[in-house]
Length: 178
Image 1 (tube, helix red, strand yellow):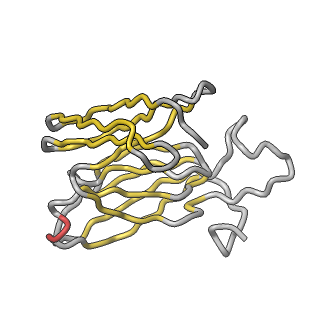
Image 2 (tube, one colour; image 1 turned 60 degrees about the horizontal axis):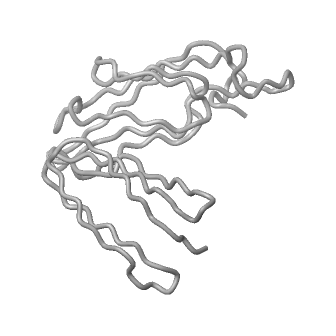
């Protein structure tokens, strides 16, 4: 079965519309619209304003709503979905039956205005690693970085202070023990 029960393998361009209301309690938060999957491509609008495009099919994607949402009013979310698979898009099997549309959950979540945008570890064969963190903040922050050995003993401790804005922090760590 596909996203359209009456036509489970329909292909083409489809429009989805949803109305929602958010109270004033969310006005001080960062609001993010998350799609867990839309096959194959999506153009997203909120209250008639274009938010963005995604063509990653099976992968989740997010769009910022903070500046576009209307509090204590009805908001209209509109999504233009093209379910036609382009040459080279996965899956490439001839036997694949198309299941396009909004095929996974959609939600709006909120965070504080300061948040970790991305974080990952770059591990090296020599036992060192670099921790990468991308942080967005509208106020000064202090980041505490603590390196511990396998027994939990503190090896290094550093504080990094920054003013508001978007910034990246890279921390080098040595002798990581699995």
